[in-house]
Structure formats: structure tokens, C-alpha cells
Length: 79
Image (cartoon, rainbow, N blue to C red; front, side):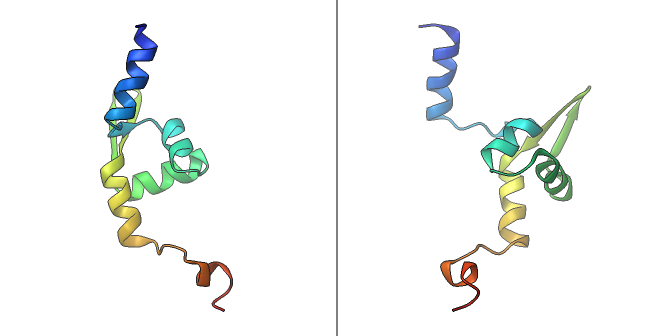
């Protein structure tokens, strides 16, 4: 099995806990700039030399505490 296939299998079983800005933006379906802003507010960023990793657990905890989840009633204007 090639290295890339091994990595794909491992990532399916064990989700990543740390992601870079671009990967996190895709993962959470938002722009890279918005992901970076929210990650910084959540204090979920870890800088290693010139690379920044975002802790997904801290990011998600911040989202749950500070943003409301949209329900069908919210999306339709409260009908």
C-alpha cells in the first residue's frame, strides 16, 4: 500500500485534531479568512516557526459556545 493510501485510511479512522488554515476552511465550509479569524478568537492557533496549526477541538468548542446553530425555523425567518 502506498504512503498516500495509508494516510487516507488512517485519517478515515482517526480524524485530524490539528489542521492548517486552508484545510480547516474546507473542513468547516467557510472562507480561509473567516476560519482564521474565528480560530484566533478561539485561541486555537499554535504557531510552529512559520506554520500555524489550528486545534479542531478548541475551534469546535468555541463555535458551540459563541454561535447559535441554525434550525429550519431560523432559516425560514421564524415561521
